[in-house]
Image (cartoon, rainbow, N blue to C red; front, side, top):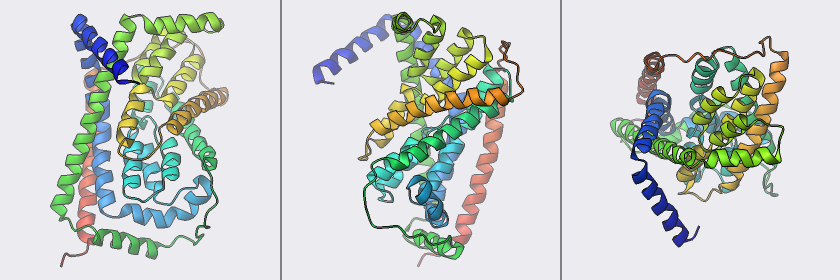
Length: 383
């Protein structure tokens, strides 16, 4: 985008915010409420945990143990397994954050970073099982189908991306995993970090808070953008235009789809309002969660901006995951004993969601404190 076009777009956006101040306030508040209820308690403990694990040399430990698995399956070093584990358990943008960290540290190559980025970004398990399956669909058992479709689709994307930009090079070692060698690698990594324990914890918390606040800004901003797009009837225009070309898809489904292209959570909410058949609901939900939305795209682009990782492979991977997740969800529904009739929307109260999410996060903080104690015990004394 040229400088003139950028200035025009930003000026038009600023003018629109002045014209619709109430809508901007409501949409930004809604985005921050979602961040406070779901994202903050789900991500912050994992961000702190990942920083402490990396400082403790756990990435090197895991790299030695899982090298013989990650290389043949994904064409990635064993250290990438840490990003896969954290990305799948905590949700996006954890995969992008850790991939960028490994790339900046020189632990992975550019192509390996792009392969890793392609399949380590998912909705968090809490969002799929709690917010969508239990809250929106009112069927907690459907969470298994949703999460299974998303995770399996992403693993398939990872396997497909092992063929991405393959170039001839020196063969990698196929040594069997060695716990002793993994422990030595971890101790060597700890010896290279001269920070005191208190400084490690302080840096971990500071970096994690900065990152999670950045996510809050993205969510609030894109909630405002989507609200303005609906006020200007742009999403309904895109849906109508698509409906003219593809007449077989109802207009409300297309409108929910285009909302989800911009912001995943709001797209899921629109899906529940627009669709009554369970199999269509699940199909559209898995498609949108696999795609993840432009809001997540902007977060990932921001985190990889300080590296040489290319953004286009990530976009292609998200499209692949959305399509694969949709197909897998319909396959799983054929073998699941779940009625395909319409469901009554059962949304739990905000206070209950808030309490359950923060209650679960308290266990994560207990785990972090336990990990810190382990780091203190195994860390080599400073001389």
